[in-house]
Image (cartoon, rainbow, N blue to C red):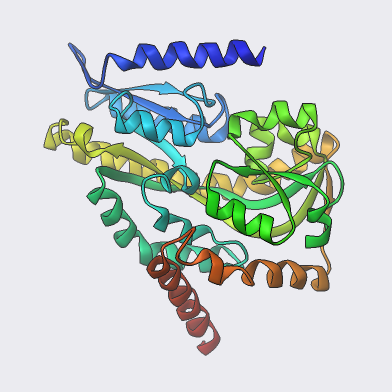
Length: 336
């Protein structure tokens, strides 16, 4: 079955080779790639945005559910002009500029207020960095707080050392950090998580509750550690080449619709996070709360590798900027 899926993905990629912007009687057609499964909350928001874009003569041809491959594959296809728009998490956007990963450093943010403050401060800088590399941010979005899911409870860093857990992509620096600390990460494409949970190549992964439910991964790893170890952010981006071909009078309307989608990504995903957990609990999910001592172990472990992350996984100036604004927020809060 999985060979058939790969063949379908290859055929789709070949079909995309011949076209970038398709100019038709009804206007411009843009191709959009995303991992969001069809019918998921993420997908519905994207499709509603597409309906608004259609009013400005811009049609979105959406390829959901990873049919075009993982996020790095989507970025590659954007660079080649095969597709023009991508709805990506920071892991995909990092293939353009690693600085965006400063928004999602594990155990750096305690709540949405801290994350929101840092993101708002850094958005202009990150958008300028992406623009300089040929990509325009249409809106920022999010997928919720990342938790650990496993076939067995994962309560402490020592528990995680016993597991074969998914890590996203082929970042050699990230792999080196995990391996040097005694862990057993397995680098995979997101589209390969489900089959490899089935085969046993991996027995744990980290993701947000909404994503775990949308992709149905949780059914094969029914233990969730309820520790919010990182916010998973993302953005809807378009190639600058495609954007510049859209009439200026239409660009404003597209940005307006994209901004509305961005607000929905924030509000609906946050409000739906606990609902997703409750739905999964009715299907067998077991939620494990951590003690303050266990939380401290996770915090110590992750914060202990910040010096290794800075300058490798994340550019040092971006890491420093995120820490600066986080501390700035905490100082303002403490002064109230």
